[in-house]
Image (cartoon, rainbow over all chains, first blue to last red; front, top):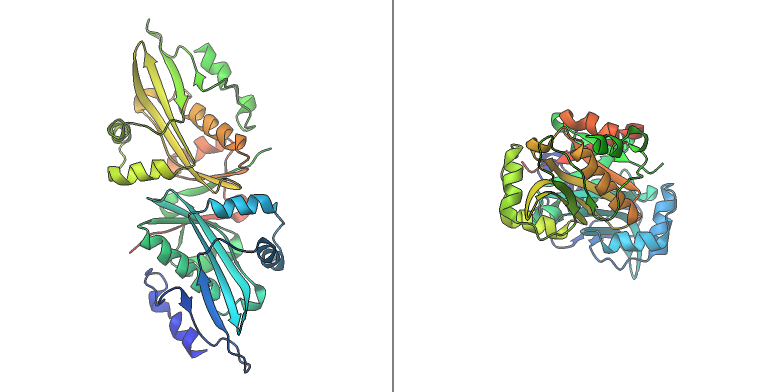
Length: 173
Length: 173
C-alpha cells in the first residue's frame, strides 16, 4: 500500500497537481499474490452493459442505454478506470464531464465499484478528471454532490456554495 | 402591460409549459408611443462586441473574446433576446446551456440588460431556455445561482439543494 499512500499524499489534494505519468497508474493494490494494474482511459468505446453493471453495483437507478450512449458521446470528457490482471480487464470506475470547452465543466456520474472503494481510487479518478480539464484550460470545475459525498469532494478542494452561490435544479412535473 | 401580465401568469411559472408560439414573443412593452417587438433567437452568430457590451452593462468581468466564442460554439443551447424597433435590433438578453444532450443541462451566463429588467423578461428568457431543453428531452436542468438571484430562480420552479445535494466548485490555486 506504500505506493498508494504516497500517491495520494494530502499535500497535493487540492492543488490540482498530480503525480500521474501518461494515461496509466500502476500499483499493487492487493494483499494477495496477484498483481494488478489500475489504469485510466478516456476512450468512449465503453461496453454499456459493463457500465450498467458497475452502476447497478452502487445501487443507481437504471437509465435507458440509448440515452447513456448519447450522454457519453456528447460529454466533453469521459474517464473510465480499469483493473487489469493478465489479459483480463474489469471496469471499476467511471466519471464524465459536460463543458463549454472554454470556461466551465460539470462532472457527472462519478462511480467506483464497492470492491474498490476506500482505496483512494475515487480520489485518483477525480484527480485524473481535474488534471484533464485543467489541461484543456477549464478553470471552473463544478459538480452536484449528494450529501454523503460532500466531504469527499471537500477534501479534493471543492467548495460548497462559495460566496453563497447555490446549486439549483429544475425537474419536470 | 396587460400582455406581459397574462403572459407571465403565475399558474405556469413552475410547470415548464409556456405560452410561446414560434421563436418570437411580441408585445408592446413601452409606455411611450413606440412599439417594439421582443424576440428570441438560438442563432449563435452573435456580435461578440455587442454581447460584451451587454455583459459590461450588468458589471460582469470581461472575459477573453476568443474563449467566449469557443464557449458559445460548444454550448448545447444559446439564446439571445432582442428588442426590435423598425429596422434596428438591440441585444437585450442572453443565456446559454451546456449539456450531455441526454440527461443534464446546466444554464450559464443569464443576463438581461438593466434597462429591460423588472419587466418579466428574465423570466421569459428562462422559460424559453427551459422549453427548448425540455423539447430535447433533457429532464435535469441545473444552474449555479448567485445569492441575489436565488429567489428569482425559485419562483421559476428551481430548487436549491434538493435532498441535500450541494453545488460544488473547484478553482485552480
